[in-house]
Image (cartoon, rainbow over all chains, first blue to last red; front, top):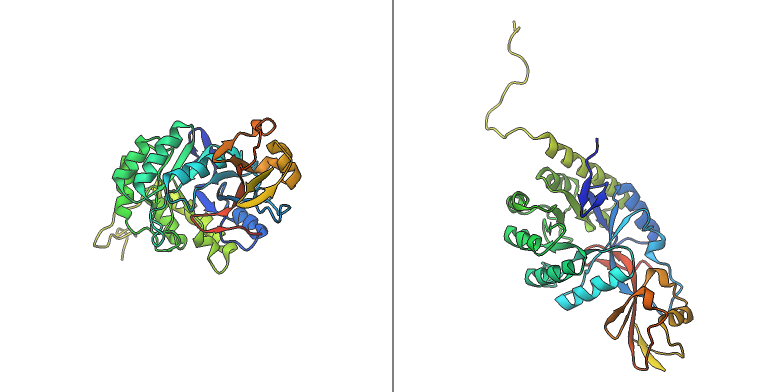
Length: 256
Length: 73
């Protein structure tokens, strides 16, 4: 049963996208990605260590031939920085995709949506496939879409908070209005959060800390793989309506 | 000539990016290079002339999720 997510002509075989931060080494990162079944992995752009130039490259462990590398602009607080990191990432040669973050505040890591909108518009015009990390704000989601975003990535809760989907109603409104895929990014704490996001009708879920910070990241990666599949299937199957009173599920005919 | 590479002073006689990366032992395939705030296309590594005082940034991909970056090195 094919249920592929396609964005700008790119086919994604998994609806679970994961970050590669916070792991103890490349080997653990590689094993977690494998266990999660993800084919999109986010990476950050940082300086090459020039005093230890022989140091290994992450891409030697996560082969770009096997996975879709999604560079992010994590740590960028201005439009200029976000553009600079995006352009460098593209030149590093893995793809035109960028997970665009323009962060507004260190404490909440909430996006600076004004800056995000500006950067999205500029990068989309330059041919980037832009995935903006945004608030759970339906109006901003629409604006990002109109500015050329390939998908919108509303947060479920603050990055790394593990609070789950704090405002499912807003996510639903975003889903209702969106003509581009909606990918929940940030806030997932455990498997049921990911399932819930998928049950709402989201196209995919992106997470990092929920897996990397778990006591057993490998087991959590596998849990998330099942959670996203379960949520997607449940969404497509169509849940029963909630009712206040019971409805018998055994036949009443033939009783003694 | 004296340039800055990733925030540190660096003395070199190399005049192209290809030569500089080679001198530094960096494989060009998986890095990106910026010279004085201009991103240099890989096709230009052979003919873009470096100058005294240039501020050079050489970047690569590291593990990263949402602002949670670890270099894993």
